[in-house]
Length: 596
Image 1 (cartoon, helix red, strand yellow):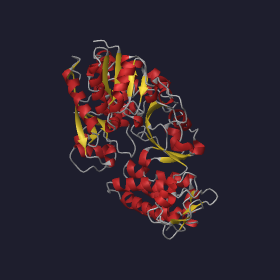
Image 2 (image 1 turned 90 degrees about the vertical axis):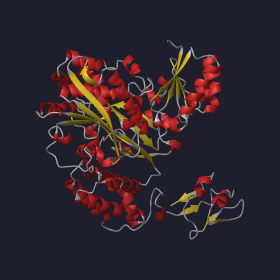
Image 3 (image 1 turned 135 degrees about the vertical axis):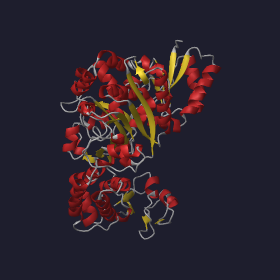
Image 4 (image 1 turned 30 degrees about the vertical axis):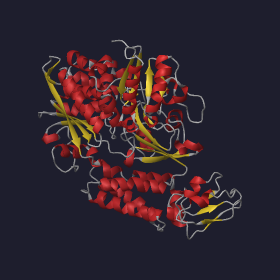
């Protein structure tokens, strides 16, 4: 049936948490009430990318973008837009600092400045319907690989494309596949690593929720190339919607003969199971993930042998992450030469990032390698809220590093980020503004990696704890001479003595903050002062008598009664009674409350 209009309602985890399913039900009910069910089809989709503004509705083919929908406004939208043809401007996206809405999704800077490969189907298909994936060239690459290419030709195409693993290390994907194919042992296993554990990261989850068949198709092509017969998609149990949609996609692929025995009647057998992981961050490391599937404690092991020679149950195993697998079908369809023209000389293609933190347009973005941080933060991200200044961008998750604002024109690729002391990682990108304490941020990320360490390596187990304690003391006003030097000594010791990437990269947040924001460490230690006004022990609240109007709002908000003064006159804060809760600063309309 052909519909005049498709109402694409986002049903990702974020939008669902904001009431998307209730909005969807209300849409369907209202459309039926207005006798429009033959003209308008409601299509549940995965994440569109700007889901911080969800629930989101995109009306196609016009491309009208509605945000922050509620059940209450649905009758008005159906009446005005679907029945009378008058889009509702008050519900459309308005750029930060602007007044006029941008009706068409293709004109919104967040979307128009991206380039989609891994996310090519986001917001365009129902992830629960395999037919919609097939309608957008789904499984055409698998058919091409199985019917007109040898396994060696598939690997050669992936090598020629320059695709590097998107899970963090950036190892050449084609070369990794070649190692696995050349291993004589059988059977061979193909694994998708969807154990996304970085704080604030949601790249893998969004792909699995929005386009699960892209991962299955990529894995099946890889299995054909490497000689694999069984695949596992390792998803952390905290992703129930991704697990549900992934399992349904696997069942549909089996029903269509795209998984199982004699695929495309080429004598090729391959099947996939979804494995639910317990959610340990260390399981993102290959050998730990393998141990988890085998039912053992998720601890890394020494390499070599590498998984390509001896992996799952001692057999050759290839592991790539979600985004890597989602790129495979496009490379086979469009060709390695086309793909390799995107990006830089050493970093080909695009990269998906979860843009989070102090940013106007937080969300999921896909950009060509080589784009600058400035373009991501300002052209796509819409800049910093409330007119505040950018301080740093943290890339690579808890094992990544902080890049200061004066390096905003840095090219985002594997080599340039590493030179700056950061890493690409799996794609977490956190923006922080001028009111962020960099010592406190380093402590936050180190606290995470310390708690997630499996504890097997002494350097990682003891070294991270020692570094975290030093940072805790500094933030608590107990820093002392020699702390900075000790941190600089401990960091390389942890890196050198750790078996896996968790320990080898965990000191990065500390090293980069010491490299670019050493003055903040010195202020904490030598002056007993937190320049950003974050560390409670090192700050004091006071009221600027020239700005204070005596409105008494601060007096009413103070839970301790620490603020006194006459109405219409400047107020005063008793430092002994002040508990530094910040309530006075939040309610002051004249910016009279100062934090020093």
